[in-house]
Image 1 (tube, rainbow, N blue to C red):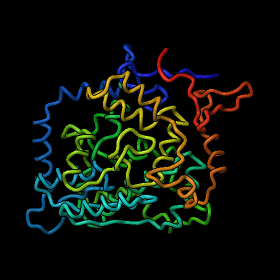
Image 2: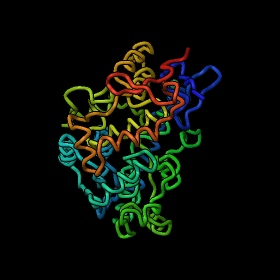
Image 3: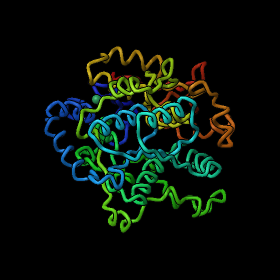
Length: 386
Ligand SMILES: [Zn+2]
């Protein structure tokens, strides 16, 4: 049965998005969360944050005060700037991404130059590429290993170096809508990772025995034990809980500190300052479109609508122009080259795409075959409420 998508009447998010819910007026919980943010007393949140940081500050300079997980993106650059402003001495930790772009490398080097100690952990790339391939075929998410290691690696480093406090950026469940208790939480723990970290039900242990992957290859993909976490007293907090989080504003500040944006809007998006590090990222976003009928264009259009920077009509227009396009290139790199790395041809890729496409959301012919326009793009049944 075809499914007509319902869209939030205020932003443009669809009801197919996991964990998104709507109130009686048809407003999604991400929009409601944003409205509720206006009632927050940010000054008292900031003083709460300062008290927490004071507790973790090493007055004798014997160790770092906190770990900041950083990708090199606009948000992590912003995190570093803010944490330094608050007088902390962080250790920045990067889990190397899947297929790092030149601009991504520039932005990582730029964070170091702001003035921090820095660790980069690279998982075995030969194994990593196998996991990308397996995850794309099994759960339709090429970025699954990234979702795992951006959490496990900073936490492992924090445990090893006995630095209890980890400062994360935004709680994605907040801006993007999620269950109420996940929105309210200001900490990130193992439960949060398993529930909201985007693992799609594929566990790290499921990889054992596939394509010659052994336990020894998965050390960095493994969350520390509860005993290890307790010994160090590891705790994480979301900076976005203590200060109003605003992606475009973060990019603006980051640029003033040397962060480089893309010279034009990124393929599959409507902004130039996000997801510039990992060349596989567009495949990740395209699968979101195939599964749920929305991608980064809808995400960003909605973020701008909530902030009063775009009308809903303007957002709809941008969606028609840019959303859901077949990912033939990213940051100027061809799909063929990106797939070559994970040992997949474009023909194989298209078959995997078909397998993960929610056919109820898209136009098909009378035999149930997906229809495409002349640029190979799928056509949604409905792009707005009717
Ligand atoms: Zn909404």
